[in-house]
Image (cartoon, rainbow, N blue to C red):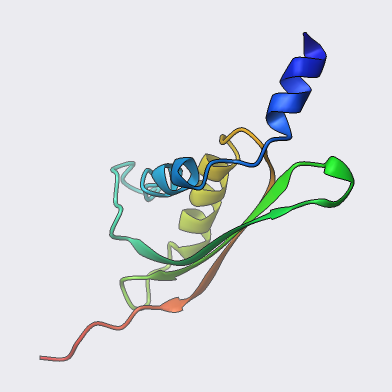
Length: 103
């Protein structure tokens, strides 16, 4: 039975399940779901060497200029991604702030 669990964890994670997890992250100050706090620009799944599972790389921008919650939002998103079966490593980077249109 343990071998079956290991084999299941070595299968590639379902990208849709990862996206579902990314939709769930929240800001830590309020605990409310805030899917608009950040925009995911890139989500990539790659196989780790030696059948060590899969790594998920995410790049996101914050939707509010000057938002100080970037590290907390990235860590929250990472913890949600790590819940997906098959994910052995996750790297979530905040790469900037999304600028809105001027009026």
